[in-house]
Length: 215
Image 1 (cartoon, rainbow, N blue to C red):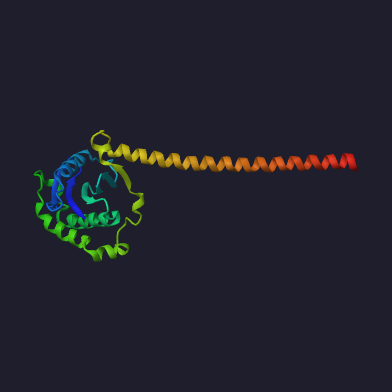
Image 2 (cartoon, helix red, strand yellow):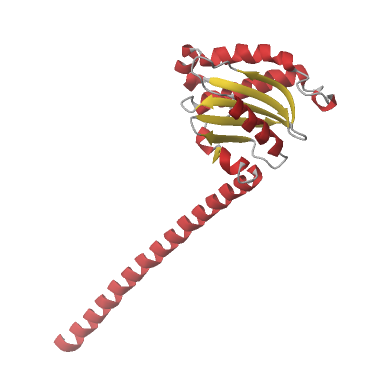
């Protein structure tokens, strides 16, 4: 389920709206995660990935950035990623329609706290069992959630690694992987040609030998 939701202006990390799920029955302390969420939002910038998942033990932070605004959700690790990002996309559409033009003008934290009403409504619809059953039919541009960058929250917060740096590393690893596959293919091709050439030389030598000695 979705336990925490934050909407933040990326340029200065100003929180615009938020919603937290009371979790007294399970005894989980969400203040720690809330603190991590605030630290994370302060680290965002124009070079941060537009979609990202950060692993945090039994929880996952998912965030999406659109038009300079970050939509972040803290979910249980078993909550489907596709459902989480569909939820964030839903919030983005509604928030942009209601407050998009006002966002650059505000300076007070949580200026749009009344948006919590819509967050709670949307949250219930995505937690509902029917939404889970219809997960495959959710209309979202994130059809392939496997391509969304995944990192660890500790790497970003405690080690001081920026999300843009992690994104660059992910891109570099992807490039190295492609280069490795290309080099491997080239070497395999050369190996095949070498084997064929060796067989050809052997056959020619054999033919010459036979013709010289037996004809």
